[in-house]
Amino acid sequence: MAKKPRIVIIGAGMAGLTAANKLYTSSNDLFELFVVEGGTRIGGRINTSEFYGDRVEMGATWIHGIKGSPVHQIAQQINALQGSDKPWECMDGLLDEPKTIAEGGFELNGSMIEPISTLFKNLMDFAQGNEASKWCSMSRRLGNKSIGSFLRKGLDVYWDSCKDHEELKGYGKWSRELLEEAIFAMYENTQRTYTSAGDLFSLDYEAESEYRMFPGEEITIGNGYSSIIEYLASVLPRDVIQLDRKVAKIEWDRCDSRPVKIHFLDGSFVLADHVIVTVSLGVLKAGICNDSGLFSPPLPSFKTDAISRLGYGVVNKLFLRLNGNRKPEELPSLQMVFHRSDSELRHKKIPWWMRRTATLSPIYNNASVFLSWFAGKEALELERLSNEEIINAVTTTVSSLLSEPHNEIMSDSNSNGFEVSFVDVLKSKWGSDPLFLGSYSYVAVGSCGADFDTMAEPLPTDVYHHHPLQILFAGEATHRTHYSTTHGAYFSGIREANRLLQHYHCVGV
Image (cartoon, rainbow, N blue to C red):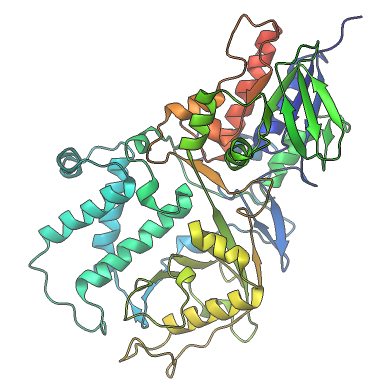
């Protein structure tokens, strides 16, 4: 009796479970199927948790556009969009106008914010492929390697057109140019969390226009993002998913009837005809730099070059529980405008890592839990800090911002202050987690969209090889136009499942 083809999927995140779901439901029991997961839970970078009775997302949070999104379609199908059993991170507070506070306790009105907000939006719209003649001519004239350089040149052009603006009064030691730059930096910091690029000067300009968004609003999932994962896994027999199975090495192109041998850290191994690798780009980067290597033989240079060139960053979320001595409605949703870390005008007790977060918002209207986002080295610093250090720093920062304006911005006191404090924190730690080593991918300067296509190419490359499709690759970092997203991971899982289904003359859709 002929052996069933054995397919092993490494990783039980969105890509891996989508591929498993598709293979299992479309093959009429043709395959021997396993999903091996290094962690003790399914979901990967999707991880719904709870904090003081509220449902929160430690990883993937948003459905990015509801029209055409497979994630939205599944969420609708399983009635997961509107949570019923407990409050959740719906971020409806974002619908209200946040208070924008500049360091020193100065609340900024629309006339100060809107010109810079509009400028930043127009620049990013153009970079992402929407025409705007002024920026088009500037882009051609000046040339741009990075989004960071393009944005800063756009700010310079704006300043050149506003030389006759009247002097700024009533904002302490803030000059107009310093304040406008700080507002612009606030939007840059938000963009860093969108892209995971710790520095926008490392984010490639040319590739930005290839990224595709689904139309429609961006929403969260009431029953938690993990409900999507649980749905995908629910059709699989219980023995298909194996948790706490950390992969040590993948041998491939072996002279054997099953050409792939997967070694685990506990010393066990499994043989396979096909392996779908869905680990993060961060793990792949570590795997090709490691002396022993994740793959044996090593991946071909065209593959490792793409892995090396693409960017992969860290984004972390920080949830804070408000002290009961304040009613939640007393602390508004904040946009925070800071002096630079090297400025002599800065408040000395606001730490450097707080200066590059842009917002602090309740996770729903009148919630007692607030959320801030961090990217890059600030996100890594957040992982290192103790809860007490974080609480003290955020308390100092928010109390300072909500104080009456100081005559001396360098003052460490809050003599007329609005005292606020937090009692507990919950934070993600994607950068230091060895199963992820970061959050999601981006096109770094020096790479291009074609590198995502290279990431998706199966091995061996010889289509006439007697053992084709030994190693296949899926995950958000293998999708050229929807990288960094859960729906990009979903599409990649479908793509690789279909590749195998078509190889065995099953119907792939």
